[in-house]
Length: 231
Image (cartoon, rainbow, N blue to C red):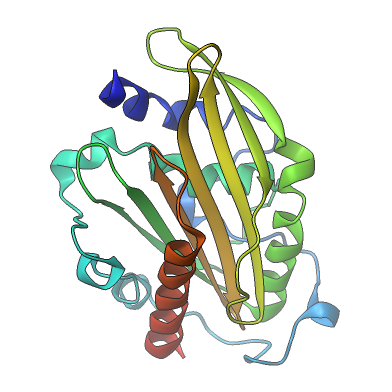
């Protein structure tokens, strides 16, 4: 039953609302001008790096922590795989054609923990606008019903998560998925951090409530590497 619960969550994560469709994890922020709110920690306009450079800036399994792997054989059992895209769906963010994104899926075994990291490089104003949209996620998707593989009903709740600020701006949420009559099945932390024109989105999902300090260390490591590789 444990593995069955793990496999089933990804498809339910996008069921919270009916926003415009997004092109997978490469979607970035809306195209509205947010330059007035954008801090000055990066250039307001620059040509994004290539896809290969952004991919190289992702964490390696060893940098994420002991026991993590990107083994493709486990990818089908990774329920965090759709979480970053789902978060952008709930933010109703529009596609940013100028952005360059890359993502990686990690897990610490067949039943987790599960992690997904997405890096998006865009203009600083676009990155700031995306963070503003992400602040609407709780309003758009606070609670919703879903269905797991096999027809088992589940309820998903998204709440605010308090984490240490990383970079210029940080938005964080806690997701809890429960099966009525059976209790909580999965928990997730979804944290987005912006540093100038870089946006790093990291999801950590597991069978027990994640330790906030672990999440913070992962996000800090991801942003530090992205800044070093892409500045």
